[in-house]
Image (cartoon, rainbow, N blue to C red; front, side, top):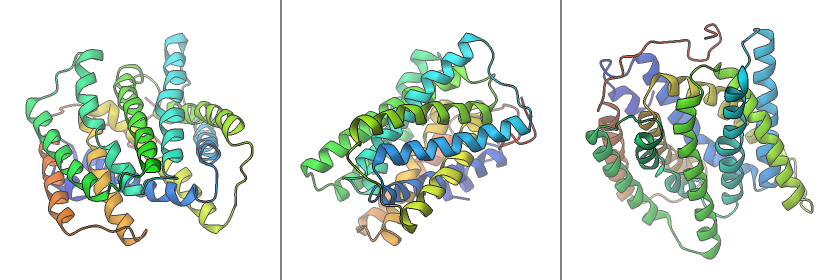
Length: 315
């Protein structure tokens, strides 16, 4: 469990939610380095498309075996299609493309504005107020992330373009988080995730056909191993957990994962990717973790529990 998860009191976040939150931070923090490793050898849209096609096939196969309930009605299917594009195809196509040019830690840092974007969109789209204490804590945390950003940025043209792609991905993901909170409450998490992966892969393969027709993948051990990690752990498991948490937590609370992810990405980038981390970043990381813990404690949840991986509870 992460330091942030351990700091969450049971009065506001349940133990199961805390463990799931910590797992999301660790896994998503690890995916940034894995993506960068994959796109060194495989064109980005092709890599993302294969990741989602495989993950969607696994999850939908599980759903068929367990006889889960499929979406009903035009409203639910429309939500699935919209999120396939805005939560999966666009953000991850942009992120995979961006990591050809920017360090994994820098990409994660730029994505960390997501909680603040979600806090702005939440009152507009689902009419829920975000506690002032949570907003203040997120501003402090994002200030720490900006400090890390200045430690990482070298401002080349390629990094600027990659950074802009990450920011666009962040905006699409933030809107999708709020949209999903409103539209996916009654849809089985495994099926919702699997369908989004499957439909999102179609859009990504279209991008491969349009933009990468002259590029060829180099399928070596590094590319295959990292893509398998992204498919099984970084997609099949983590998105089901994410959608379960989204049903039982406020959008701004679950979005604070994006503030912890850069910390994980920076540390993993240093230890595994040999990316430099100045000592001043250690103090910044501590501030970010404390601020995120404060944001999560800002409002008690008081909602029911369900099976995290939705392997038994099919509601």
